[in-house]
Structure formats: C-alpha cells, structure tokens
Amino acid sequence: MQSILNGKKLILSSGSPRRKELLELSGITPYDKRVKEIDETYSPEMDVTQVASFLAREKAMAFDHIADDEVYITADTIVICNDKIYGKPKDSQDAIETLTTLSGIEHTVITGVCLRSSSETYVFDDVSRVKIAEMSQEEIEYYIDTCQPFDKAGSYGIQDWLGVCKVEYIYGSYSNIMGMPMQKVYEELKEFCA
Image (tube, rainbow, N blue to C red; front, side):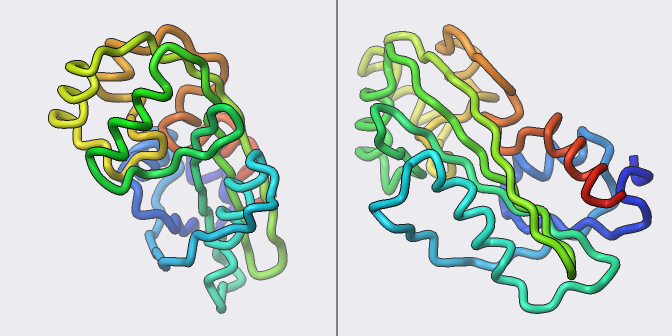
C-alpha cells in the first residue's frame, strides 16, 4: 500500500517489534527505521489521558532535520488504571504488582501517535478498554517467567499468553493495545500524505 504515502518515504521511529510487525501487516511498506532515545518524563500535573500523545510528539520532535519527502511516525502506549499510569515494569516485582492491580478490573490503554513532515506535525490518539480476568499469584508469576513482559506498558502483551488466556473483553482497537492503532494510522497517513 505504498500508494497511500503519495511518494513520501515513511520513517518509523520506534524500537518496538510490535509496531514494526503491525506496520508490515498493514502493507505500508517499504519504510526506514530511525530511533532516537528521549527523556520520557512529563509533568505530574499533566492529565494522564494526554501523556501518550505528549510523549509521541516529543519523540517526533527529537529529529532536527526532516527531508521534504519524509514522513516520520512515532508512538507511545500507556496503560491507565484508577487514574494512575502503568508503564514498562522496572523488574519482576514491579510487573507482579502491576498485574495484581490490573487483575479482575477494567483498565484503559491509550496510544498517542505523531506524524511529522518537514512542514507539518499532527498528533492523535486512540483509546481501548481491556478487562483482565482474575489472576492467581501462580498465574501472574508463570506469565512473567514465561513471557518476560519487561518492554510492555502495563506489564503485559495482548498478543501473548495473557491476551489469549486471561482477557475477558476488549472495547476498541486490538492493534492499539499492541502499540499502534492501525486503522486510525492508515486513515490519518493517507490524509497526511495527500
């Protein structure tokens, strides 16, 4: 689906293997990958629902020079439960605590996405709701030992054991929970590159 890019070169600025996989599944290829690490801190005063979009924009703004024929895409995914953000776990204990909190209740997953060209910056987000069934301590420890979810917001991946065996329901985009809301990304890219 190179045609939706209208001759532009797409640059994915993300180290996430899930975002790479989703982009390839969408047929929006070829693309280059360029990643810059940024300081992912944000003001504690910021509304938690705005954090993912803020960080996606910060990631895009880290690039000083963008060629006229390039479009950068950056993203950030956060998990919110009871107005608290659960990012990537620091270690096994942090992952256990996060999954114990999320067990049996609904939470929100927000992915912020930024499209940036040499002349324009556009940010949008997508929101999904997920309910993980009650998990025993044994199940939580099994999951962490087996799937090693240390690079995932909320300490879980929707595409692995937990998503298959313990998710009761999802409202919204599945790919958003994986890290990039591809239906929105597809439509917004088409418009952005028109």
